[in-house]
Length: 157
Image (tube, rainbow, N blue to C red; front, side, top):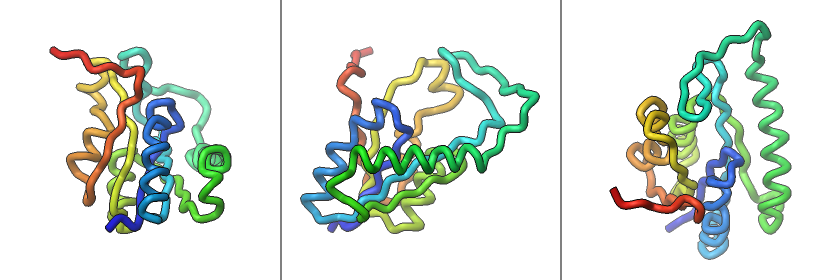
C-alpha cells in the first residue's frame, strides 16, 4: 500500500520531470504528498561546467537566510504545481547533502515511495560528487521511482 509519496526537488527542469508521475500516483492511491528541498550548505565546493572550485568569499553565507529563501521558493512551487492538493501537501526544507537528507526524511516520515528526477552530470562531476538519484536508489528505506527528463537521451556506450 502506498500511503505517503516523497517528491524531492531542486527546482530544476530535471526534477520537475518526475512531478506529473508523483502527482498521478498520489491521486490514484490517495496518498499523502511530501515535497522536500535540501539546501546544500555552501561551505564546500561549487561545480561549474565540470570544474571543482573551492568556495571563497569574504562575506559570511548565512545558512538560515538560504533556508528561509528556499522555504519561500518551495511555498511558491507548491502553489503553482500542486494546486489540486491544496493544504494536504507536507512541505519541508532541510539543510545538508541532498541524498542523505532525502533518505533521512524518508525514514523519519515512513515514506512508502520516493519519486524523483534524474539528470546527467559530466564524467568528472559524477566522479567527484556522485549522482543524488543513484545514491537515493541504493540507500533508501523504500522503493524509489526515477524519472529521466525527456531531453536527456540515453546513449549506449
